[in-house]
Amino acid sequence: MTVLLGVPSKGRLMEKTFDWFAERGVSLKRTGEAREYAGAVEGVAGVKLVLLSASEIPRELAAGRIHLGVTGSDLVREELADWAATVVELAPMGFGHADLIVAVPKAWVDVETLDDLDAVASAFRARHGFRLRIATKYHRLVRDYLRAHGVADYQLVDSQGATEGTVKNLTAEAIADITSTGETLRANHLKILRDPPVHCSQATLFAAHGAEWGAGADAMRAFCAQLGVTLPDALLQNA
Ligand SMILES: Nc1ncnc2c1ncn2[C@@H]1O[C@H](COP(=O)(O)OP(=O)(O)OP(=O)(O)O)[C@@H](O)[C@H]1O
Ligand SMILES: O=P(O)(O)OC[C@H]1O[C@H](OP(=O)(O)OP(=O)(O)O)[C@H](O)[C@@H]1O
Image (cartoon, rainbow, N blue to C red; front, side, top):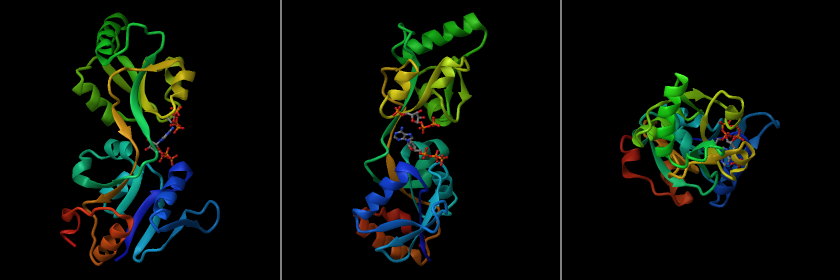
């Protein structure tokens, strides 16, 4: 059986993933025509490359359709209800850093922390008759975070992109999104709350608990040894 390795199919995440494996003697390549999602692995036996959208990799791991996957740690936590029981973090990869944060309009001079946001949210509801809206695509992570910090009087509104624009467009009062340079927040007159971020994300190599390893177990052991990655004992116990 072949070990299936899921990797982001485009952009910076794909290129940096290819670099990370190359530094460890494994060559990952896109093959075929420019827009064809086909790939090849050289330098290790019994491993096949599967090119996927970064946001689909958590689901493919959970379904056991791939054995290994590279994606942002934020996406795994957001997409999988019980992520730690479903996948194992084999290696943080040191790129794709982004913080999932909550931000409010810069003009809200009295709001610097989640406690301030909670106070404003209660007042907002009393004044407007509806709950303060926070735009995000990270529903699970943001809901859990706000619950843990005692913020209750809000509603999440879905935003799958250009989230920082929702405040200006009057479809939300605040946002929760990832940021790396902070430029998009600044350009949209938003400021990050002072509390610790919802999550500090980076690209991570994950393995699926529920995948069938079969004869692929030996290839997996050799692959992890080559990558310098520690293989948790529990992972291959059913192989
Ligand atoms: N500005 C950024 N800086 C650093 N990392 C980022 C940035 N934006 C996104 N990321 C990270 O990249 C990952 C998402 O990558 P990407 O947008 O390519 O995935 P995707 O949603 O699957 O894309 P698509 O659906 O268009 O294929 C997330 O883990 C996220 O944290
Ligand atoms: O802090 P910065 O360096 O400005 O980066 C942050 C931006 O990057 C991401 O957007 P992406 O480019 O993935 O597009 P999206 O808005 O469609 O998600 C994120 O959603 C922010 O909008």
